[in-house]
Image (cartoon, rainbow, N blue to C red; front, side, top):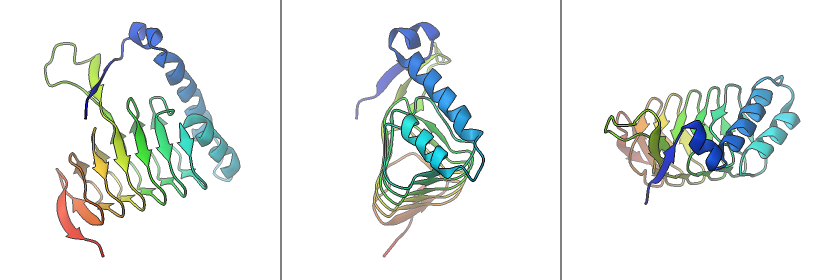
Length: 181
């Protein structure tokens, strides 16, 4: 998978049209995070306006953050707990019936190891999640990872490699724990 290079300088964001997307996302996220808990129809409407595509019955708790929103695609019955962060410089694709626990980070973006210009440039790789995936609280999914159908990511894990379908992984870095039947 080829890495998408990016530059976070204002000049580059303006030249590529990304600044406009970031500003729109910022406005929608602020509105979303300030809605009362009971305003579920309004919340779903803002999610649909923010994300690239959304299935039926989306639900996201307060504290959600992302870069652009338009690179996030979720299926039916998507749920994300409090303080979910999705850095979507590249696409994030999430299947149907997926759960994300609180304080989870899904990061398509990263930086080079070399210190030269690390503060403003980097790379991004898409993240894909299958159907019926559960990511436990405080987990982190790194760029380029694909998570197979039915997989479970244990709370507090750092997922740096692909996860096979119907498996449980956990730890730092996340490793195979068992198969799910």
